[in-house]
Each structure stands twice: as structure tokens, then as C-alpha cells.
Image (cartoon, rainbow, N blue to C red; front, side, top):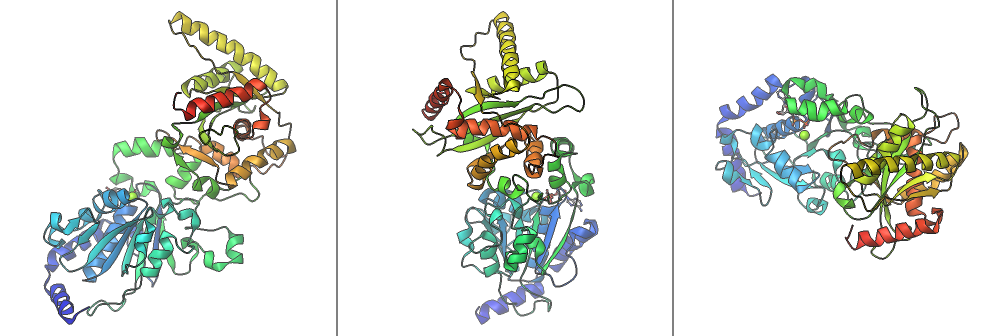
Length: 502
Ligand SMILES: Nc1ncnc2c1ncn2[C@@H]1O[C@H](COP(=O)(O)OP(=O)(O)O)[C@@H](O)[C@H]1O
Ligand SMILES: [Mg+2]
């Protein structure tokens, strides 16, 4: 840095309209809850692990704004999951930089100070913010910073890779090393705040056995230089809108996902379970990914119908192959919806048909055993009932998906053995849980079963998992298809889907 620029900055720092500036910091200190203010101590990372709507973004923005004020000429990185998140939430959002900074602090006013095409925000005191995203982590290679604010880091694209080299996190850390400028407070050190709702990703925490083997893999929560604060969505209830309360809180309250999204608990993995949460998290996709491809409804019927009888697992799964490959092995499987219920045979048979027709399923999958016979008879009579009802209403349906059989799973150990190949496909990243934008908790209970079922015969039978496993086996392991017709159905449906003529 040239002498000239230094003296310019010192000058600015000394003379800048301090009143406006300090009053903004003071205003936040007055209304912030204690956990929203930087903790004491010489931490390098301040992690705010809190529920949705807790005030994470606001706390992060207020902290970096304060750092920028107290360290004129500072270089600050703002890092989000996507380019759009960095711009729309971290800078332009209701709790973002432009909202917490006073217009008088911006260099040449709002329009000049914020260059949204290059993602740069300049302050009159010489401090500068630059936005980055986990979509383009390579941009963090090179630039150096004094401070950083990382928003929703658990949702970064490479969060499941943890703190490994070449990740957004590690590249940011490499560049977080600029020295103090003259006149800065003596306690200056390059440091960062991470504000996020937790997810079971390695960036936050790795399993204990991994940590024991290799301490360098420690997630942010597990590092000695991190100080963590946070809390539950309910802490900020007074400042949240009614729509947020109904659209987000009411929906998640009392669900497993709610423990994560509202109470900020990192959901723990069960040793020896079929899957761990990180595996599911790493392969989640948006619904746009399954516009093409085929779907089936898969059923695991309950044998009795009373209060403590099993649920009937009803799960919609899908498959997408390469263009001419309908063999199963090469493609990807999708877990789309879980409509499992506890109810009379009539209730679940109707629910299954509704799902099949709504999802344009190419088949309904049941097990090839006694339960399967029962199930098939019931589904046939229910189909007749629905068809005649529709005829009365003048609806003529040309296609009814056929009922297809898969090899039965048997009891106890048999179920586990049959689920293992599906676990293998998860491990290869070939099975994806599809995010339902209208109901983020859609797969919650299924995922709870997947991550707690260990195959132990003393455990309750995981009906949802069972149904899912039948369906995915039928779609992805073609030797499972019992009937010639079944093979034909899948091939035809796959070819139609590939040609976009569904
Ligand atoms: N201590 C507080 N006092 C007043 N309003 C607050 C406080 N903390 C947060 N807010 C407001 O609550 C809303 C949600 O905060 P936000 O930071 O966007 O939440 P999050 O990032 O955790 O989802 C915003 O309007 C924010 O300005
Ligand atoms: Mg936020």
C-alpha cells in the first residue's frame, strides 16, 4: 500500500462523520439479544448456529458492518451458497449490508457504492466488501481479506466435503490473512463469522471416529478457535411476520426437521443405521431434476388396522436413465414423496391410487407374497371403484398403471439384506431425495427411519423404508422385475420419458 493511500485512509478514519456511524452500531447494541453480539475472547471464528428467522443474517451483517467501521480500509469477504444469495440476501436483503449501513457510510451514495454486477460494496472510509459464492469457490483463490462473513454455510454446495482442501471454506481461510493498517485497534486479527442453520454436514461437524483418526478434518464446531452462540427461532418471535409463522414455523413445529430448522440441533447419526444424514444431505435435489424420468408408487401394506398396528408405507420413487438406457444400473433413483399412513385398507388403497394418478406413475409396486396378493386384490377393486366413479363424472381414463410384483423381503434379517444394495446406491451418490418446495418436511419421517434403522430385529419394522426399498429395487435392479410385462412397462415408460412424450 502506498504512503499516499495510507495517509488518505488515516485522514478519512479520523474525520469521517463519526456520529452517524457510531449511532448505527449503538442502535444495534441496544436491540440485539446477547447471543447476537460478538462473544468475548480471541476466537478466529464466531459461529452462530440458530434456527430459521432467529436473526442470523442480521447479526452477521451488523458484525461485519461494525468491523468495517472500526477498521477503515478493511477488505471483507461475504460468502453465500449462491451468487444470488450473496446479492439478494447478504447485501440487498431485509437484514443485509445495505439495510444495516447508513447511507452516509456508503462511498458516493447507495447507487455508486454498490456495484451489483461485480458484487462489490465500497464504504466512504475505504473499507470494501466483496461477494463470493460456493457455486464459484475458485474466485476465493487469490484475494486476501481482513474479515469474512459466511451466511448459511451448511447449505454451501461443498459443505459435505468439510474443511478439506479446495473447498469454499479452505480457500476463504487461506486468504484470510491481511495485516492491520496503521491506527487499527490493537486487538485486530483476521477473523470470520459463520451464520447458519445447522445441517449434518462435515463442514460443521465430522463423526467422532473420523476426528479421532485425523484431527485436521475437524468441522467448524469442533475447532478450538471457534466460539459458538445461537438459539431457537422462538427467541426472535417478536420480530417475525405472521406469514413466516404460518408458512415456516407451524409447518415444522414438532417434526424432526423442526429440531434442526427451528431449534438448531445438529441431528445425530445412529451408529450402524442404514444411512447417515450427511449421505442424504449430499444428494438432495430440487424438483426440477425429475421433470423427466419414470415414477412408481410402492406399497408396504400393514397387516392389521388398529392403533398400534404398522403403518402402510406408500412411497413415490422415480428413476432417470441415460437416453437409451432403461436397464436401471446406469441411472439415478429419486425419492419423491412419502404418503404413508395408518388407516383402513380402503383408506390406503385410495391414497395409493391418488398418488399413482397424480404422479403419472408407470406402475404400482407390491411384494410378491401373501400380503402382496391381498394388496393386489384390494388395489384392483379400488381401481374399479375409482374408475366407475370417474365414468359417472364423465372422465375417461385411458391408462391405469399396472400392478407389479417384487421379490418379497421376508422378515427381520431379510429386510436388511434387501436394503443393502440400495444403501450401496446411496453411497455412490445415485439416489436423491427430492425437495418438495410446498412441504419441506415431506420426507422427514422416512429419513428418520433411514437414519435410525439398524436391521435389529427388536426394532419396529420400518414400513416407509420397506416401501421405498421395494420401489427402488424394481426400478434400479431390473432382475427384480418379476414379470416380462413388468420389464416391458419399465422399458416403454423410460423410452417415452426420454423422448419427452409423457
Ligand atoms: N434483535 C433484534 N431486534 C429486532 N429485529 C431483529 C432482531 N434480530 C433479528 N431481527 C429481525 O428479524 C428478522 C429475521 O432476521 P434474519 O437475520 O433475516 O433471520 P435469519 O437469517 O436467522 O433467518 C429480520 O427482519 C431482522 O431484521
Ligand atoms: Mg438468513
